[in-house]
Length: 231
Image (cartoon, rainbow, N blue to C red; front, side, top):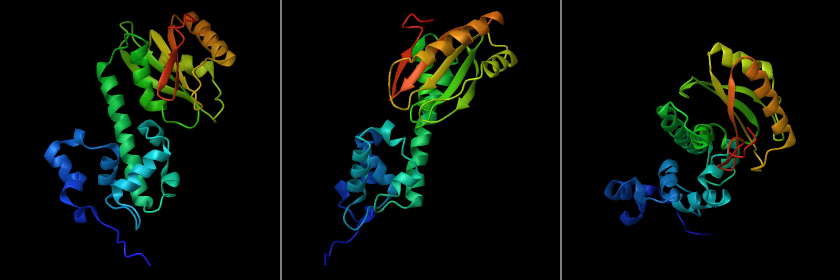
């Protein structure tokens, strides 16, 4: 039988302790695995917290955006990760998303497709199902509000044009930006995407509301139909 003993972070060599390393050198000096190790505190009987964290990150291709797609149920499949640790990881990643969202919202103004994409990426970038949102703007392109129109399965969602116009009229929006995600990561507008975009733009025009863009989000990338010359 192995004599290997699970080591708590406090029992590691000083140079290997991520908490002390952060205090000495700042949070930027830590790797993603070391930061996660601080969250989970300990590993299992075969791995330290850092080693376990490396394995979890590896399962997400060492990509924090991919890690953000994992839920509690998928994280507790790793030996040494119970429900409490899994919840801690998910909560930390959610705070990161909200920080991004807060940074973009602080601008309060959309000047181009990148601003719109930066606004929606924290909302839609990590979802495993499709959602359709609108961003409502005033005449100076300042953000008035956002609204989720629908949420669907992996392959699509149902769009009700009346809900979009109702939301825009209630907020007295002068223009709107449409956005939905492709969970598959496909960065190409489908025929259905183009059809619903034209349908919404034509209906909004009657109400003197301009559809400025339709942003498609996938795998931390975006496609702007306005940049593509479709709008």
